[in-house]
Image 1: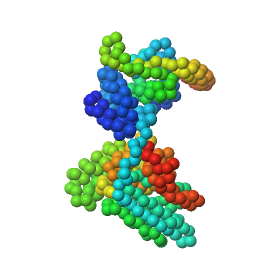
Image 2: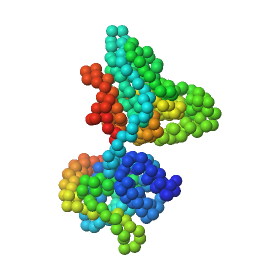
Image 3: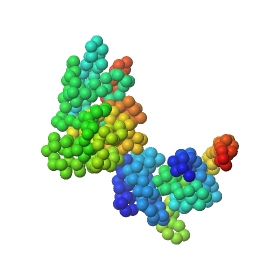
Image 4: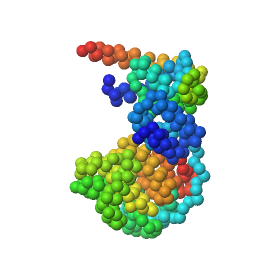
Amino acid sequence: MDIERRGQWLRGVLDLCVLGLLRDRESYGYQLAQALDAAGIGPIQGGTLYPVLLRLQRTGLVTAQWREGAAGPARKYYRITEDGRAALRQGGRDWVTFVRPVTGLVAEGVDE
Amino acid sequence: MNADDWLRAFAAELHHRRVRPDDARHVVAEAATHLRDGGGDPTVVFGPPGRYAAAIAESVGAAPPPAPSAPGPVRLHARGITKRYGRRTVLRDAGLTVRAGQIAAVVGANGCGKSTFLRICAGLVSPDAGEVTVGSRLGYCPQQGGTADFLLPDEHFVLVGAGLGLARGPARRAGRAAARQLGWDTPGDVLTRHLSGGTRQKLNLTMSTLTEPDVLLLDEPYQGFDRGTYVDFWDQLGRLRDAGRAIVVVTHLLDRLDRVDLVLDLTPAGGTDRNGDAGWGGRA
């Protein structure tokens, strides 16, 4: 995939993807990066991910807490807030509304 | 750069950008944890320490500025500067006082005499009235020009160094180090005429700081800079200010006025020196 284009798309939706991952369970940065990769988004570097997490934290969409895991060192765990769920609902709806006509417009060109 | 070195440099950059110590500690610890979990080259995972620190500073915001330290001695004093070209009065009774450790921005509409004012301060143009006093060494970076097409960047550094009595080797090293502060790795074998406009301006700017001037006059030196270089440029100005330089920068980009100590607005209608106006004078 065109790396530059992927980067542009990601900038617009990475916060929503992170909120989506946090919807059901709390998580920490490295685990979120792996989950994004596993979901097919592709590798996300820390330099991209943590500023997004900080912004989500500052705007109250997630809370964060340092905690020792079951094994291993202390990690900063992020948890979605009610405001975060609302933002995910609204932002997710907006994304779907946006992407549907785009898909409609480009889909026919894909197989040519 | 190994992880420890990178983390140290990153912590220093956060401190330099006045990210609150608490925030900085968390961010550094989190980056360390991430690198331990995932491995990898930190400059790939997080990018250069300075750039990542800038992104963090933007995300968390910086601490309120410390109480301004006592201003240093006056380095540049211009008063009553008037300049006419034919019947047109370009500058009328303009004045500016800049002390060591201050950045002054000269702003105003196109054609209001910003560059003329700076050239008068540099002693390149005589005013019709008024006078300028400058403390010892002066550096001047013009809007364009000032580089030699058929010299290598290194040869520029040697040339400026020669004026300071520096040998070729040390001059070249000093030039390259100063260029790196702007995020520019000088190529060893590219003639200046083959550099892009923005890169030539980096060379220009590098030369003007190389003499370690007490007063640095910059005439919109960032034309053609990309976004990253522009950020590096203002960071570099911050470092030079902290090192006690007096800096005057002509700018039409108003977004960085939060980083300056004084603003001189040359727009004729207002025509006011906003020096000391609390709304404009704060450091960020």
